Amino acid sequence: MVPLEWVVMLAWNKECGETLKLLRGKRSRREIADAVSQQGVECSQEYIRKLENGEAASVSTKIITTIAKTLDVELIEIIYDLRVEVTTIICTKS
Image (cartoon, rainbow, N blue to C red; front, side):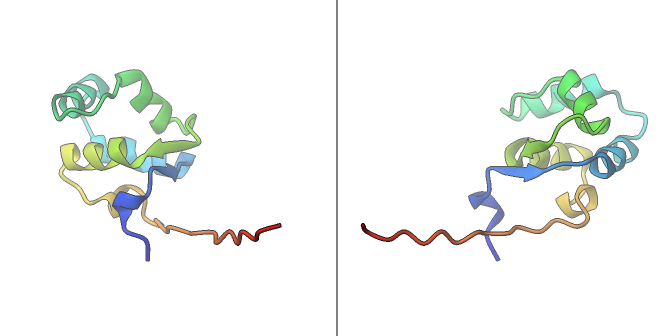
């Protein structure tokens, strides 16, 4: 397992976006974006819209973990099939 703090970006898809929208409930995107920004993480309501509509291919771990904290949910509730895959690159001297 790779610690989440070692991961900079996570893959994102339409299903994750639909889950995010459901978890947001009646709170506005602006309210969520403002709350995330108040925690020192830059995030706009437009970016949240892109996440919810599946228009983003990836999301930074910093943003999505802060959104999860703002919504008072665990990250796994947003990205329920979260897996971190590490590819090993073997370098050889020529």
